[in-house]
Length: 457
Image (cartoon, rainbow, N blue to C red):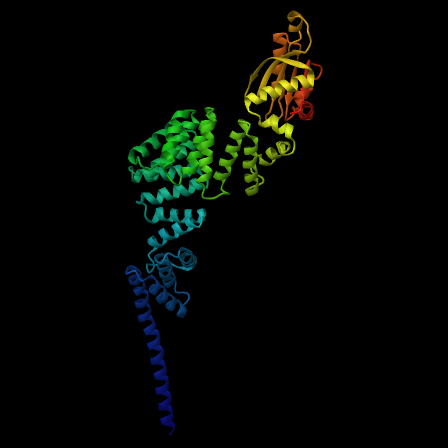
């Protein structure tokens, strides 16, 4: 009996051992077959089936990082980059690359995913690894340069772009990138050489014309810049920026109507109403309207900007400066009247405020300049000595000391009796001090409002 029991025990142990060994061996034999099938499923377009197989493997062994890798590949094939990114990050944190996971392919996808989700520093680390793993790939060096440029590290960016060109001299993207770096470094001859090379290699890559336009603009060659931006507008990604830049060129050559058209177009093609480009387009459009005294339209743009970003540049100050336009009809007329209407308004203000009759008046960018005399019947020889210089300003900024000094020099050199300066925005403190004890009257905002009201404006 005892020997029978011992036999049973031995047999049971042997059976258990054989069963355990079979499980281990089966797992080791079956799992690789399963993992190997994932790649085949992906290549045959069965991404979702590949995902199910990878998940089945991971359900038995969550630490199988090869399965995590292939699950990530299956997600990428199924256009699910966010899920792929999670699997790839798991692999990147834990896996040892000993040949079971193809590291080169992994790093290429990992770098693209980091870049896609705006993790530039992590993406750069991956591309730096790729330049070691695959040093003959020009694209690896180009992408590393691109990321350094995004991080505003121009010197290393330039070095990696140039290394990319050493590997592939026909890489028009790298030539354009080198040109853009030189442009930012204000090395314009070198920038022009690289950009024109890129354009010759790929004349239909219209984004390159944007950088060409920037070079021309920075070197004050505005007609050439306008032509280059005209080409850049054909690139859908560069269109808004090219329109803004061309509008700026039109502003610089005093073609305000063309500038307005470009800024308005830039706003209409905006993909994001809150982007910096869109806000700048509105800001510059408002500047055009302000320059042409279409203050209502300028206020409309400043208000729209403020709703998106209340701290954008000096928008809050602009709205404050022009708050009277919406509440004071006289000041609104002063600020928004057409050039010809403004000349008549100035004549009324001179007569009502100082009993002066206009002898000559000319429009200026800031308002108008008038020569006037008191309304009395003296002979011309006597009256000539009483000629007064009147300057009317409707800028958003206080009139500076330099402007007041210039008026003082004018009345001294011309022998005028005195000067009266009207301003809807007041005068600088230095200017006010300078005018003291001189034949200069400063009519600030409150006085202008009072005179206009009495004149019935």
